Image (cartoon, rainbow over all chains, first blue to last red; front, side):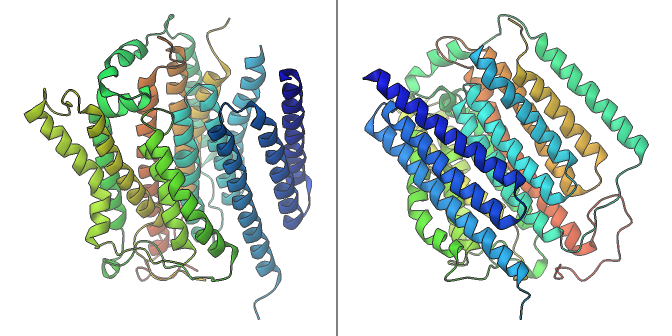
Length: 98
Length: 312
Length: 113
């Protein structure tokens, strides 16, 4: 049983790390700001979600597990807002004020 | 071996991010480099088994410092040309001096005595009567309480100094430039959704500091962010700098700390001595006042002196 | 087992980088950033010393850790003050460095945009 849990946790965390690396590559390699924001938020939200999912069965208590979920939710909220703000700034730059 | 697998990339990343900060061509690039350096440093603190410091580094060293640097940089970069670098001779000399200092420091760290001296055992012994479970908090509040008292006074004076930079006729206004509200924007949304959660988390971090990683500085900084966010979103106006309630909030921490310290003469062995059996409640009282003061002082430092309305 | 760790080297390196940045850059704002880099390095030197002081079941000596926490907060206060001074210098003279001759002062609190 614990063997299965360990394998699940390791696989999930590794998959999460893969998304982080993919998102970082996108941030560094993509040409324009909007694609970069897209790569970063998509990959990081999913990556952190997978890492949290992998860590959940390893949590010592229910409170610890809840804290992990809260961290994920807060990062989602922060990342989403930041992405919207960056995208808004890009649009304001492209559209000359009329 | 596995330790090196983690530590070596982290150390390289830390130095690399620091170097990128210096080499960045634009000011904005330098700020991004600095943010990265601060966040990697927070991870290094975790690897150094210092979670209290890691939290402080992440929230104050990396986040709050970067916010104010980015804010000032964005206001100074409008139409600014990069200034000419100093003469090559000065840069060469600076480089030589820096390499020498770094080499000497590395040598000194190499030559540290073995076994290393440590105050861990005496701290653990003397923290028992305080009833605290976190040795770092015990050092801050009991063994080295004088340092923390003086530091809390530094925050008050820093706010004084920043406010005194305000132009004469702006004195008495709210700190910082006035921000224009965008009722429908994502920032306004965040400023409505986040503070209720953030305030709970800030108080929680300050509260668990007695027994677990956390404390008044880390929690107070989170509270400060939750206060500044609605200002930036233009949802609420910050209080005027001549508002006595704001001033009292900023001074509450050092005042309570000082009063408890002076009371030590009457009821215990001297300045900043806690009477036996009352250490934990008194420390909690100071911590509560300090959390409030750290939050108010940091918020005022982030906002800056009163100014005219921000240019859109 | 060597005595020196990667973190000790990185800390020493950051102190060097910070010092170079403070001496060899002319923009005041970049000097402030370099000052903070130097600070991260100095604090990490304390962290390395604290980690070496692991004893009595604690993974690190708590005294240097407490000093770094106070240090971080004071460094933030110093940075905030330095930034306000830099911004006011820029607002009143238009200067971004301390090296050049200041431009004739404009009206205080003039808009910068």
